[in-house]
Length: 128
Image 1 (cartoon, rainbow, N blue to C red):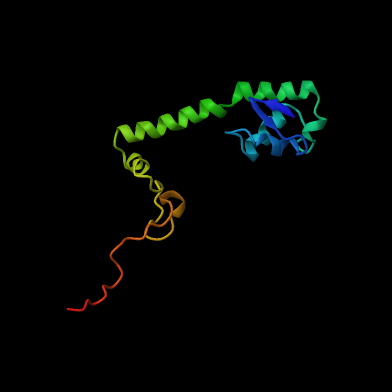
Image 2: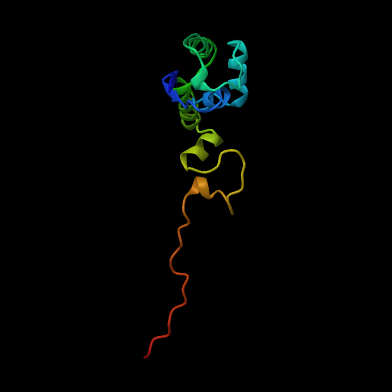
């Protein structure tokens, strides 16, 4: 198992797929990193030499913001939006979609499990 940027990437996958296991690197960024490091994207991680792994680490370390630093930047941006009471910040505060999606239906991922509101059942007539 190779470790790049503090993340253990899978051995049996192609290099371009394995790099996407690092937070902040997607498929297109993975291809860019591999082209700068002069490595064939379809080679398996287990077949990489130590020099190739170090070239990948150098490219990632010099050119990209990844993992913890990127997460700090993103959370800082969200905190800033909340502090200035921007609309997007308010949506983040109340845990609702912030990019204009509808919430009357759908949005279950963001809003959570349905909660049934009580008092909807008809009352049984009592004997008097």
